[in-house]
Image 1 (spheres, rainbow, N blue to C red):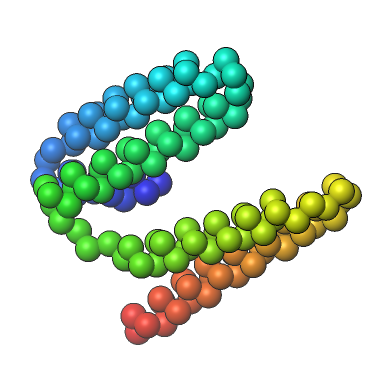
Image 2: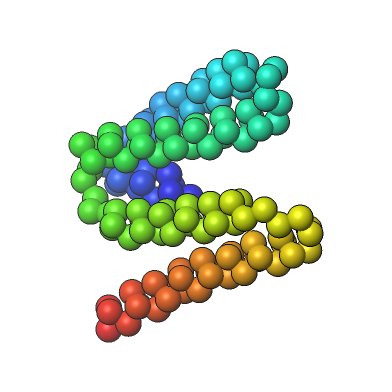
Length: 130
């Protein structure tokens, strides 16, 4: 999703080939990570490969896009949401709860906290524009 937003600038200046470049780089990175770590780590290597591939493509697209067609993104909010999500993830994983039902309940509450945080941010943003 973030790559689609970032790549808007390339569409506006008719240089959509950059999307193909980033996709090719991402594909090579994904296959390389899977080939290197797949035999040892199995499906988790595939999951991490996908994560790093998407991160790589997003960063490439952002930095090249800022040179080709600068767009002022709200990076402060993006990092804030990422930070809150990271803290809640660590909180969900760090507490050892043996009961599956209690663990799922606890993590669902943490997810609810994040959704509430996002909805509050959307509400504040919408009200600041009027």
